[in-house]
Image (cartoon, rainbow, N blue to C red; front, side):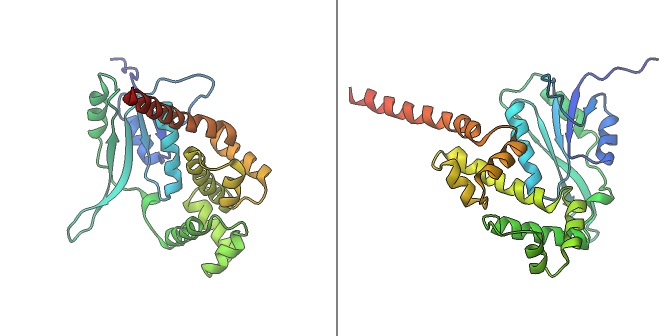
Length: 251
């Protein structure tokens, strides 16, 4: 009997081999990256167990590209008993603009949950060090002098060890992690429409405006000016609507 061809496309983001293998047991095609040259049909987005909140920034971008596609966010959960056994469970995000078979997709994936945690989800000493480093970065990212030696000194470890731990636990270098945190804050400030690009760059720790512009585009795929313009359009329309509503009320 011929094997049934996959009828659904699942985009797996930040998923380990363990989760990819579990998804592979379903009647679906598992994608680990998007082909940017063409808009792919995606039926479900799955984000793997992450140790760092900065990685969750990708969810917002995916929701923007695929606003009506169901999203599964995986997380750790320990049993509330003496064993304290851990499982990987999931939470689904569904849109009111979803497709008719969204629930069928959800039911299909729920059948493989929960999963047993694999080795990469277990927390050791290096995990705590990486979390402490992330805490320092989130608290002090606006400091233009913040660098790897400074953070390592504060955590009483060598820069070489901290760099190695971040690459292992976060999957990125110190510089990349700091840059991503700063860009996420820049996106928040630019979306408000209350700050100029120069003010944003200075606030988040970029002493060089050109380096900020280059970094922002490398992380987001668009310039800070383009992002600010697109993000502020809904605010402008909302403000205009309020003005028109007030004028109508006076008539």
